[in-house]
Amino acid sequence: MTQDQLPFNRPYMTGKELYYIAEAHFGGRLAGDGPFTKRCHAWLQERLKSPQALLTHSCTAALDMSALLMDIRPGDEIIMPSFTFVSTANAFALRGGTPVFVDIRPDTLNLDERLLEEAVTPKTRAIVPMHYAGVACEMDAISSIARRCGLLVVEDAAQGLLASYRGRPLGSLGDLAALSFHETKNIISGEGGALLVNNPRFARQAEIVREKGTDRGRFFRGEVDKYTWQSVGSSFLPGELIAAFLWAQLEEADRINSRRLASWNYYHQLLEPLERLGILRRPMVPDHCRHNAHIYYILLAPETDRDLVLRKLREKGIGAVFHYVPLHSSPAGLRFGRAGGSLDRTEDLSARLIRLPLWVAITEEQIERVVAAVGESTTGRSGGW
Ligand SMILES: *Cc1c(COP(=O)(O)O)cnc(C)c1O
Image (cartoon, rainbow, N blue to C red; front, top):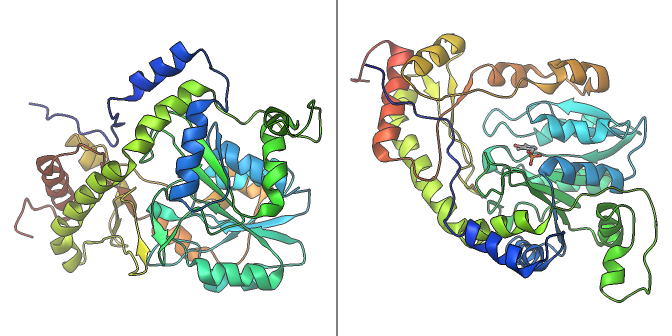
């Protein structure tokens, strides 16, 4: 008999999405920056303590906007981890910039702030920390290096909604920050994202870049009597149907994250014996970071064959996956980027990582089944470990 498949992710819907979409439909206002977009902006600004939030089509689009706003040009260097999603690097490569890849910390798998200074050159323009699994990077150290070297900081906070660093929300700590509402994230709108503009220097230009290079935003506020082409830009704003969907999710954001946290904590508790045996290592969250349970991952012992473990888990119907193929070793990473020092830890850790199924309504029985399968696939024994 084949067991039920446990998928890696199941998008969670609150039940109010269609209601708000209907409201937008009957309101007859479908283009971007309507009432639902404004509600989402106000919520993000208040909760993330950011002066300006702008919805975008995706986190990728928000990162693309960042590179445009910073006027990245060929030859400019941008320091970032290699252990991250493609978009972190692609946004800057798209403008001719060179991603410079720095190694990660062994505990959080975040950009190692102790290695940043030696990667800085006269061509460096910015540092792009990515808060892996919603656990904050060491932002105090990163910000102080950036200040000392005259660099901008762009947070890739795709995974970090409602997580915090020393009590400060992720997304409020860089000059700019990018969020994602992709179906696989905690709070979703299918595709979707936001740019948080924390440095007032970019405030006006961010609106222009997002509205096809025009001052349309100022026109609608009555600040100018016509709008015209001001600079290069593109269309980065989502329509109201997406914003209506997102609003239903933001209203429930705290409840969604606390349900995920309960599942994350249950995994953490059940996997402790396997960690004690040296079979795997569980995620580490520093005391001064509050995470949002975006990912539950395990790191297998170095001698374990990950492909074999993944195959066994899939045979048991468990949708476990791995990531990331380090960017410095990918075809485009080799072409557009370069290493800013040794990337040994990135290579070692990314090759041992497995992400376990986690979604809002996953049950305790399902988590127990995943943990039993992990134990069996790694020790060869069923239980008793
Ligand atoms: C998901 C993700 C992105 C991309 O988000 P999209 O909204 O799909 O563009 C970028 N960076 C990181 C770290 C991510 O996890």
